[in-house]
Amino acid sequence: MSDYPQIFRVRQTFERPQVTDIPAEVASQLASLSLQDQVKPGQSVAITAGSRGIANIHLVIKAIAEHFQGLGAEPFIVPAMGSHGGGTAEGQQKIIESYGITEAFCGCPIRASMDTVVVCQATEGFDVHFDKQAFEADHVVVCGRVKPHTGFYGDIESGLMKMMLIGLGKHAGARIYHRAIKDYSFGQIVRSVAREVLAKCRVVAGVAVVENGYDETAKIKAVAPHEFEDREKELLVLAKQWLPSLPFKTADLLLIDEMGKNISGTGMDTNVVGRKYLDHAAREDEWPKVRSIIIRGLTKETHGNATGIGLAEFALTRAIDAMDVHATRTNCLTGGHATGAMIPIHYSTDREVLDVSLPIIGLTEPVDAKLMWIHNTLEVAEVECSAAYLEEARTRDDLEIISDLRPLPFDASGVLPSVARLGQ
Image 1: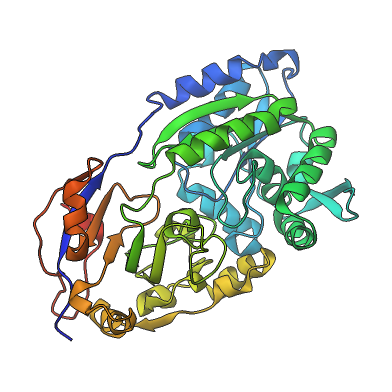
Image 2: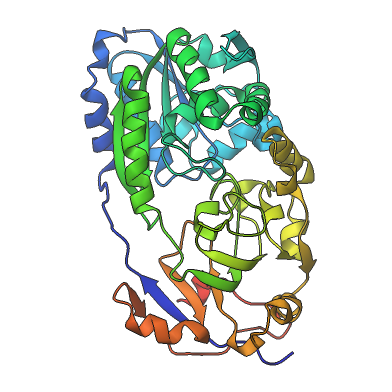
């Protein structure tokens, strides 16, 4: 097929609050809690580190450790990420180290284990699990990013509360909590487990991070345990306000260079691509509406975990070859989302994928297709768009057209470069 749409590049304008000095802001926020009144010299403090690729997370964790070292305490880091890393301690430690969270950089030990303690039974009748290393510490600091969840909707979604539930529950806890959520609701289960954890597991503080639409640190907030729920509700409002989005509301095809657990729980943020409620279509009240998603590869940081790839209709074979099938299935089955591990139709080259996907977009001719192309769902400030969007883009104050129309830049074998390289 020769009638591919031409493309041009747009730059979006998002609100851009930004924390410029991460260590100083973490120190200031923690100082506001007067933790010296509770944390005594020589006491141990477990600090959670999750699997998401949070901007500057290594700086945040290091600054938390330094604050407690300044109080004479002995901090250590606990990987807190449910079933990620193939559900193994080694896999989870490897993930956080790939983000720069190492013992050498942070100046304190990492204690990775999949062992949990059953703290009690929740009101709903299931066991409440908590990381054994953290449970044995004198204090626990819960650190995480507050943002819209990829599968659940409410006034509490992904953040400190979920970290106490899924992250510190490890594989055993994550498995049973996801089962409970199917019978009750995410909101009920997250509150039920958090209530028990806060009462019984010596949580001394939370450090919440919110990012802007440019994948930058927009806000850091230290939170006292009794304020977790109220503060997280407020921060979620900001996170939704600052959430990045695609520049247009509908697309025939969306090409994504890379997906992975460091990007989103579902590899690609369903809030960005419009697949939060249904695997292969946007709900009636959900935007954007994308006919087909094409996954071109996995991030290095995801270590083969391709959870969420089943939400895409098409893929490059290299993305499938990069999958760690066991890790992907473990994560998806633990989360109760088996379809997230299913394999899309895949081909070796972008040209082949477009040759089969463009003819099935409806009555629109392939050359007139609405196509958007992004690097990943965290990086959508600049987007490659097909000519079908050009007229609208010219009328939008929030969009800057930064290239002329040009053909899709296939190489001799029919493969496209990454969006990032194309924009240089």
